[in-house]
Image 1: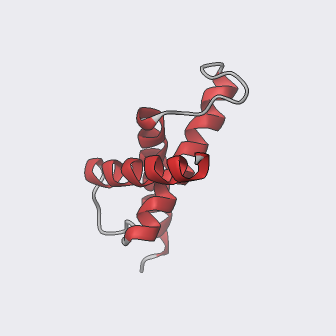
Image 2: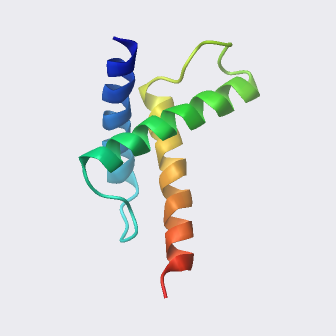
Length: 85
């Protein structure tokens, strides 16, 4: 059940991140949006644990996952903009 919950939170976080930061170089599609949110949740969890906001074994919630997804999306856009001629 934990994996399904992570996928659901990841999808919602990915959709919210795409709403907040829209651009021409963003990934599209259901699977890419879900992966964006899941990666954002992992980024938020890693940074939160490194900064002492979360304890070991505690993960980021929806807000943290959304902020992490926005960070991932901004990095994605910066890399994609450099590669575009």
